[in-house]
Length: 193
Image (tube, rainbow, N blue to C red; front, side, top):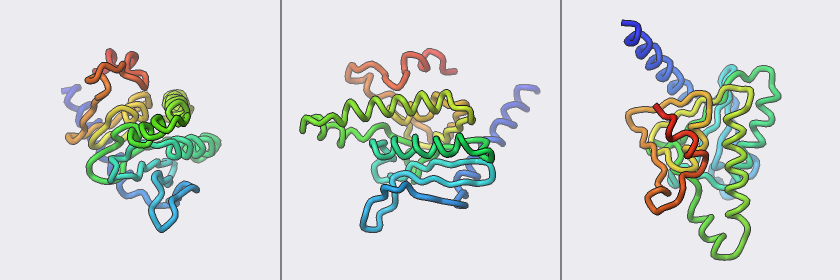
């Protein structure tokens, strides 16, 4: 009976968080470096009461992370952590398919072929953001609805709370080609329950 009541309470809380995230538009603000030509910014920031909401906004790319997104999120966290009114940070993905399918491997591969340093810079800053989400004073709730892979796992699994749905597909696909699971995978994979 006690376990059933806890499951019901958790399910109710998760549904409330998902509803809040879906209907949050108060104070919506796009990152400053939004693409020209009327395109929406790849990450949106909004507030609903004491909740601060990050929306990964590249649904056609399954909300894949790029360096501009990592930097925008990090800068916005600076502001939110300093606010007295902020009590929780929620992260969600736009669209119906994905929370975040990982890093933008197309951009990273092209930069690597061109000899640029984007690869090193992206992964260093992404891992620093993952660490920050894990250690910041505000609770971090990741709404992992849909595909959650690679860098999306890094954005979500280290937070204080993770909400999965019946549509969540959680994966570290790099292990299938012999790479080690990055974003702290060696730490969190044996601890998942």
